[in-house]
Length: 72
Figure 1: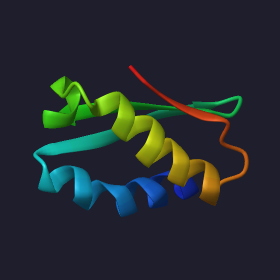
Figure 2: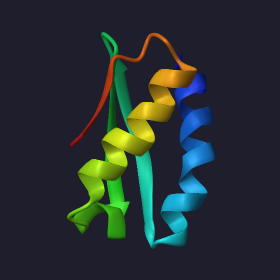
Figure 3: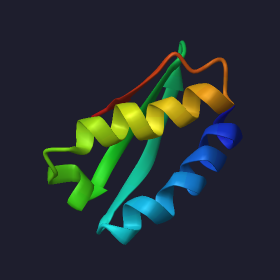
Figure 4: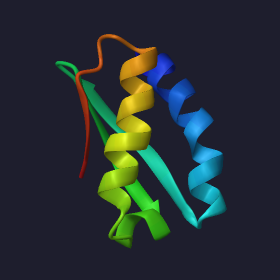
């Protein structure tokens, strides 16, 4: 499961890095992927939109076991 999650994050990472941000995988437990938004994404007021409409949407589309994505 971790490998699948990391693969999706690697697809998303270039877009985040282009805006000065990044994303770090923390954990996967009971359908919940936990990530840390870094750089510009960590302090951006739109980071929740990016997380839910970007990261979570792609994650759920590619990995059926993922129920949601949360940031710490």
